[in-house]
Length: 578
Image (cartoon, rainbow, N blue to C red; front, side, top):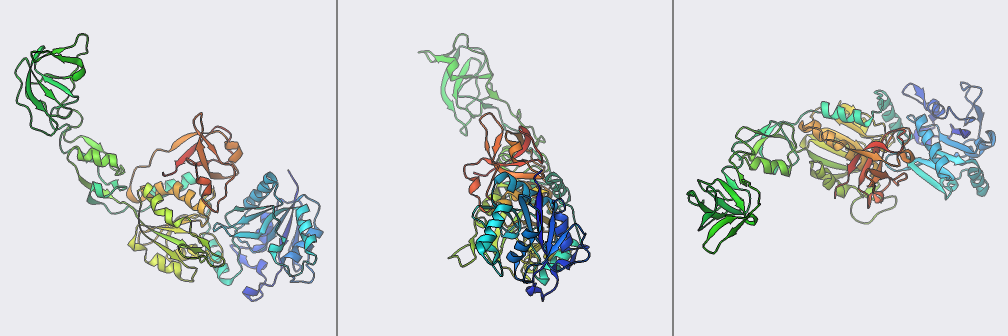
């Protein structure tokens, strides 16, 4: 194992919080400094930069930047001079109450495999956190030397060109009083991240069902049957020809009549023994018909007599009344999704309406001041690249979008959104699911006394996903703000949400081998784009950029890769809508 040292920054002025000692703030029963030290506990040497703290273990070295309070770059320089010679160095701020050792391990793994000079974490909204990173010691030392004096230098002045950013859960910082309050509220109800399969089961089994009602099936595509559909009439309704040919009575040769039977036309008069009449596929066969003989099995003589060709097979080619469905036969069971096939099959036996639940009606809420849908971008803004495509994606799963809104970062914005939730069955909220100052969804959900079914997912990306049910019955699906994380998690969870709300039967997963699974798998399950492999199964993308959906172009879908999977492992495939 490569030796790794750690620098933990535990000083600073905390000017936005009135000069309090931020690392000493207690959240969830431990100080934020303790959380940082726990995250780097496996490192070879640890140095804490900041005021002396008598409570720290003697093996943790303590130093102070000179002059005190001269900024994070000066603190990093002081820390680097005080630690050993490990080739990798973790640099970490002590204001991350939910940082985990797993997140640090992921940064170290990525730094080791990529060879980048530095790897930084990004929260689930995509914002880089430059004080959560792993550096090559040589690159960090060179960057500090280039600056000359490190005093009051901005952190961005230190960032090398050869750096990488990866999204991780639990990496939002607490640098305001409101952020601390939200973090304490979240910590008061801790929940272990759920594996994806466990989360799906909980959603299917525990979400409240929508009220059933009788509806015209053709108007509720995507709903689920609240009761079984049985045939009201026989199929076929009468004996019909299965082929173009001749309806005949008795053995041939036959005397060919001049009238013709067409589908939907008048039924030919009954046949006498030895008679034949030309007939089209789907036409009602006349009384007295013993069989229909295909065109290619007969010839018509000059005297208008009809003869079977030698050595042709003897077939009936008549679809008898009720042979496909008799009245009362099951057409589709309760819980079946209303699809084009179901609508057609029901109509063929005289059923056009039935009791259903759904379809699920959704409101899309895009969050964040940095997101802009229309018009020119201002400083610090980015284009909303997923809001416009979400209605089409939701419709793939039978979810109807009622409207799409943009929520600014305001103190009470989420309270207003959640308060208006009874107008829809599902709130799809993109962003604000982490734990940072701008990530206010969890605190707002807690204020509504909602029932939280999924607090977080043991999944990468998508770990910050939250699913809750408001007291009004509306489902809240909080997705990460990172575009790929949002889309991937939505595709993984949407069928379970729909099944839970409508009582629909769970679909059969698409399973097959992932030929390069070992190249992709990590310590937790991952979702990555994939393409069909020539030999069957799939090939996944080991490295993806999660801040946009460019990695989905020319891909067939996504694969869910289990933790520590080996090449050829069976994985679930999520096809991309076309």
